[in-house]
Length: 122
Length: 113
Image (cartoon, rainbow over all chains, first blue to last red; front, side, top):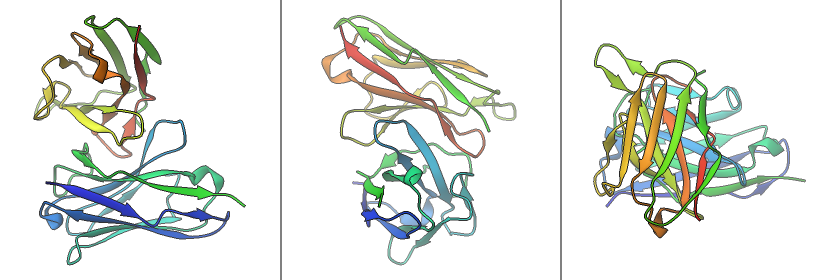
């Protein structure tokens, strides 16, 4: 059974940093691209970032480019999102989402984690 | 960026009746080389993550009831629920995966009338 478990969400002050993790199990982690998708309170879904199965290629939404970094450790079956220079607009539930593909920049998401809440506030 | 526009924002349908949700993309998501529409539909129930219902505009995922169907091509797409059940109350999103940045529609809330 595919499982994705996010952690690391917290309350952080504006300008601060946070690192999210997503522990994956139930599938061959290194064989699939992964993404982060966020959802602000009461709002819709926003794709944030994606990374290929081998970590060689990464993609970002313009809203986070230069501030967020996606990475993965295939030996630990774990996906990461390093978030810097956080602002109130980054407040959201952050979902880890699995792609059905290894290396497609255009992908849908066949499995999602339960999400991790990031709140940016003073 | 490809902008995805859903309509209506919300709809209330009686149990057993048909619900129809529309999704329009600002440019075609039909890839000519394989004749596939890079369009997915998700269902999100309160307090839960989204669940993939349909890929390639019309291919139901395994385990998805056949009352859910997707149609359309190019820029105009529809998700239909043929006979609404109580467990179908949710927000539904379309998503294009033709090209990054991957974008979602604003969502359509489906309720029981």
